[in-house]
Amino acid sequence: MTKTSFAKMNCAVAQTLERVGEWWTMLILRNAFCGMSRFDDFRDHLGIASNILTLRLKKLTAAGILKKQRSANDARSFEYSLTSKGIELYPILIAMTDWGERWASNPKGPRIIMLDKANKQAIARVAVYSSSGNVLQPKDIIARPGSGAGDDIRTLLQKDWRRTATDKPAKGRRHANR
Amino acid sequence: MTKTSFAKMNCAVAQTLERVGEWWTMLILRNAFCGMSRFDDFRDHLGIASNILTLRLKKLTAAGILKKQRSANDARSFEYSLTSKGIELYPILIAMTDWGERWASNPKGPRIIMLDKANKQAIARVAVYSSSGNVLQPKDIIARPGSGAGDDIRTLLQKDWRRTATDKPAKGRRHANR
Image (cartoon, rainbow over all chains, first blue to last red; front, side):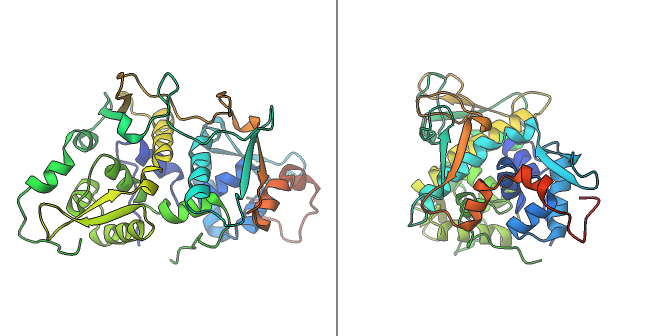
């Protein structure tokens, strides 16, 4: 099965997915955030096939999210570490952790606890804030196309999809079970 | 190619990926956040194959992230909409938008602008905050296993991966290019 590329989609979410949305990638990055750096450690801890891990690490390195350097202590081996571009993915990773702990929880309790190093207090759940610091829900946010938007994003943001759903005349072929 | 399931991994990130990490899923959800609800609209706007879209919508519905209801205006057709569980994915989606606008930007400018409905000011970039409202970087955060952690997470969080990389004796087979 050939996987569709999102590379040509003019959308920030699609572009992010194109770089980190492949199966395994966010778990490789999770481990990198925990300091893991060696190919064999990723393979052994994740139980990922070597050929897939090789592909993922190559793509992450080519995208500038990981950098590959010779190990200081063993010139025959390499270490992978997060670049600044990679480190900035952490709000996504922590938001994923929050959602998983909340909606796919372990009955024994949280799997991971994240603390502010300065005072050992739990960090806040990731949320969306206004410029003045209020928590915003999706209904509190207006999304508008910016100067870099293409037709796809403009259509997505400006069409009234709910009205369309009722106003659009039925096509010849209807899918009764969709 | 059979895709490995993350369902048995006792990790919040893996559990989130198991539900929303498949190719196309976050773009389907992006469109649902913009009010899109009909199968044909998702298919036409995304350019996704019908069989893949069917699979993704079924999985999202089974996971309780989308709900499927008969259209109020056309009993032969259905509409998909986000549940509370689905709506709570929005910090992940907005964090992905932020990263994509920053690291995979369009030279013409931002593709999407998100404003606080109350005062039309731009919303803040998604970040990780301490309980007292300070922005935290990964280096400011300590991650510890909680009561629901299994061996995988404990190993990940407690092992000193960097020291391991230098202390571990070389195995018989080394991969010079990894």
